[in-house]
Length: 137
Image (cartoon, rainbow, N blue to C red):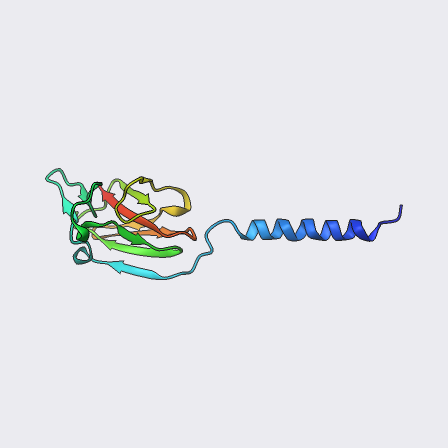
């Protein structure tokens, strides 16, 4: 059976589309690494029970307490005051710095890389900027 030129073109286009879709997903890696000190988070707080928060939940009444800019494809090393390895690392992400409409960070939008007695390393592996509220217990 003879193959038509149109069949070859269709197959080639299908292969190109599959490759394009496959490479468009996931974390491209690389990117910048940024260290964030406690001084960079003016509204961070440590509760008497030992829960640390990088910023308050909305409504935010003080502009210096806006959520942290969580840039795309960037790794962050956050300093924390717990003095121990956190047993829980949680992130809340929103599309605005006021945190309204936030959701729990998950998937490539909030990757936990490592944690120790003084820092937590997280990554935004998406191509989208979010605003972050980090909570450690």
